[in-house]
Length: 104
Image (cartoon, rainbow, N blue to C red; front, side):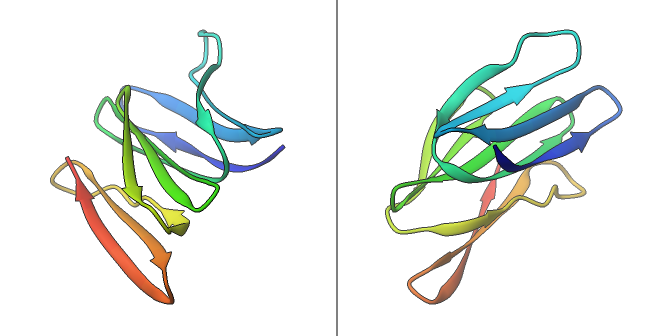
């Protein structure tokens, strides 16, 4: 089991983590759910929207409010800070440089 995060908004509390090679998301009072496969999990909330990112092999994947997205074919070390106006900023290392992408 490793890492992940805890995210709190006025409407939700969420946790995300890796157990074995599976990535999970949980909310108090609800069963945990597997959202992907990988490691190095990052989590953010923006209002009621949940954002989880992780590394799956060399790919950087994200679960954005229930939808799986590919962020990079060669990404590592994701971070997901929430933006004051809504959404989050996905940041990661790719080929020795920092990449940034806004997620709605």
